[in-house]
Amino acid sequence: MSSAGVFISIMAALAVGAMSPGPSFVVVSRIAISRSRLDGLAAALGMGAGGVVFAVLALAGLTALLSQFEWLYVLLKVAGGAYLIYIAVNIWRGAARPLEVSDAVHSHSVPHSHRTRMRSFTTSVLTQLSNPKTIIVYASLFAALLPRTVPLDLMIALPLGVFAVEAGWYSIVAFAFSARHPRRLYLAAKSWIDRAAGAVMGGLGLRLILSGLSAR
Image (cartoon, rainbow, N blue to C red; front, side):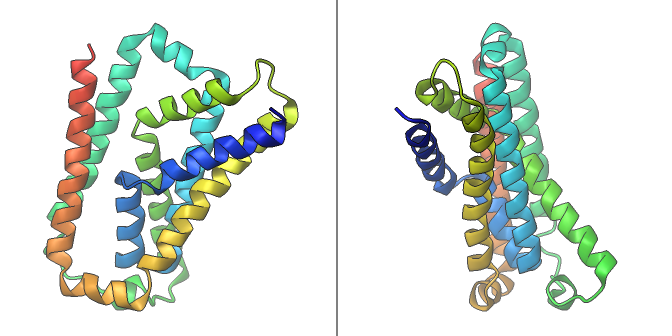
């Protein structure tokens, strides 16, 4: 298979994976609804950045390291699950707090906007990196589809393509959920939506921890 064929195959598989619901979708959609469209786009860029990290680690052969040191994979699973639960607790605790839409969405304060967007970006990156199963998906795809000797152009193109797929999809999510109607629905049922999002995130984190502990 040519380099172009390999690249397209990997990107198509990753696009399908990115579109499947999970903690990343919960985080980006909630940020876009509760803060602003720019915050949602910052979160989308964070997902892209996290995907690039996974791509680079997969190319560097992290899977071989994890298979050799099982305790490291267990540690990554437990730590990732704990972070998801931490996010879930914060979402749940803030469910009853009223949202100041005028500040979150229409603020003209540059420092405030910069801080919130950086926080959205950081939260997104950490959420993406909190699931070590994703590195296995990346590594499995790369191992199955890449030639034994990876051309330099493909090594450069893959991280860029991963960023485009991850950031592109979650930008679509951010645009969709930051529209006026979704935000109005969110404000009308904020406490219930936040608790549901917190429960989903907490469940995903707990499942990640339990799967890590059961693998020992």
